[in-house]
Image (cartoon, rainbow over all chains, first blue to last red; front, side, top):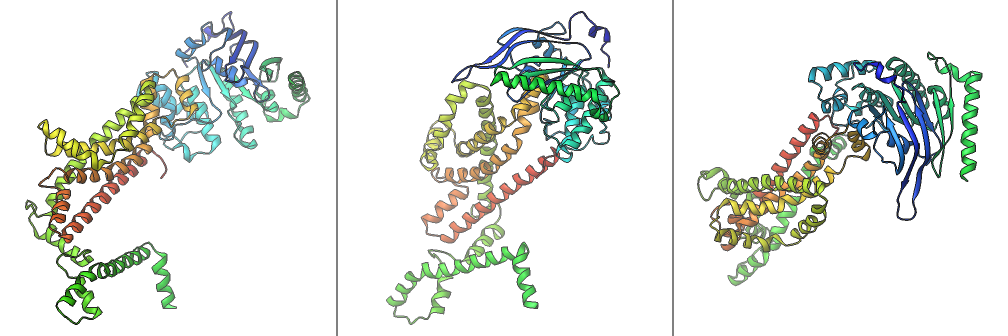
Length: 269
Length: 298
């Protein structure tokens, strides 16, 4: 927790995407995965990318993470290229599956990124303790991934992504494979984490309630070509809990998102 | 009631079925010995005008000096004679010959494993090697080892290399193949997500290898090692056949067949299979120990 917050309050946005296109060349015909993407994400934002499958929301996240290269357009992360941002370890990535190494115990899984960033053994130990307690998994250090439930594994994966204190958390449908009860609980937990750590979060989902509950900004996307239909800002209290899903305001925002998705669908067909 | 319980104990436990199977094999073996040895004995009876009964035929066929198929107790006697009664240093001791075979098998196994690992890393990391090397590796195993072994022995012999090295080379030749095939698959086994995870940390190629690909390949390596270690014994024995070697189980097999000493051949064969089975078991134990250390199930 050493990075100063002043770097986050700069004139440029944390993520700045301009006129970005990405086309996959396939054998039959080119696939326009991303088309004319313009997006700004500010420090501390919780941005959800929502849309039907094939709309390029995961691809967009992967472009931000420099796991995919755009065909044209510009993207900067804290003023740097995505490649530099990756080298500087500015983000932690949470995948659809927990992606834990089965031969490492929980503690040692969290040490993985720390080992590669040159943290000392004692620092690794301290950080894994700290972040495991943050995701309420203290005491599970010596367990192996297969001994934990899916929800617990995904919490380990979040702790691992946070352990080296990156500015951003990139999450690709992290709770998609979980049952609804676990998912709800983890949504609340993630909200609390976000509030506590002040990270910038980009979160891919195809669940409207999840997007509305978590986000400060909801980016609605449509498929073929993958493009942004609408960006909806929300203004819910920071200390909200799941009860808010019954509120008029929540239902109104959900309705706007649903309309946006429908509009995108009509455009596409 | 009692009989019922006895019966269920016999087929229900782990020892019961093994005992039943073993008994069946031994009975079939004794019957086979009578069947295969009888024509020679009957010929002899008729030549000498000897009256014979079936029980005489059976007992004679189980105690011939050079039977077509020796009976189990004859082999057991031969094993006792050549393992317990002879000094280990004696050229008639099977322990001595086993040691000779085992040493070249082990050297071949270690070299084959190392060669296999090195080749698999090359194949996984260098695209050109993937396309050029793999066909040769597969082709190498289509040549019968029995045809190749004498050439290796002769070629190395002409270079002044004799003794253990040519034999170990043939074991190596057999061992490296399952290791290459298993390790190539193992090194490529990590899912795309895990590779992406490493990329998201800007991991170097070396880090991806040591922290992801190599540990992921360990279960594949052990599956290969079990095949390889059994092949290493086969390789060493085959190598001893053309070498005119003085020592080794292969040499024993050869001299046994020269002099028609089937008891000796079978004793050597059984020793070889016990050695192989023991080695495979040891690799299995190592596998379990490593899996425990790595926290993997099974």
